[in-house]
Length: 309
Image (cartoon, rainbow, N blue to C red; front, top):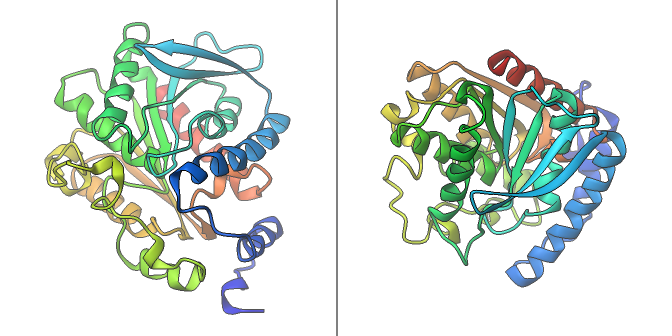
């Protein structure tokens, strides 16, 4: 057994097996025209498992001109808080099944209505197109639901968009959401020891395969020093954030910036919690078969119940 296939005794057998499979899987396509269908099929396989395990109702809607998937627990949750879910995918893919994949388990476990937003994607649409879509939906939602009963969360690129949305909402003087969740991503660039560690944990790609804000198409033309672009660099911007939940894992290339963002939120006077899973990887909770994923959904649900009521 190689060093990277060794785990602590608390890591589930399901997670160990899944990580071993990662080491033999072919890398995702580099060409965008191939990457989008590749990830759509990958996310659909995971979504099929999620829908088999969690009973929800799904309806496609348009809010403020933006395509949204409304996910409600089976039987409905008419008086519940509302969560906005922002999918990952390097800002370039992850729509459709990817958006639903991140919403289905949370809606069922939290017993809340979740709006999974199919925001515009790069490179066709660059910053601030995606966050414009998210804030437009948020404006429409708070016409019907008080802001304190609305939460926003996302994973990877969706975590960065959650931070951008929180910063924009504060800048525009809209009602502050009750809470936000940023998972496996942050309002900072990908850097630090967790990126360097990918040379160990991801032999096929390593640290060289990790994108940066300077090279991601979504940020083309954006001023990376703008507090609305990478809010984690700006304490005054962070001070306006609502209670925040951050989640990462020791084999996640985003673990370093997520941990740094947690410290900076605390320093800015924000209520913030950080959960770090040992032995897990980027976006581990997308696979509903992992016990650690089930644990993640419970953590997220408890967090939003605490702050949204």
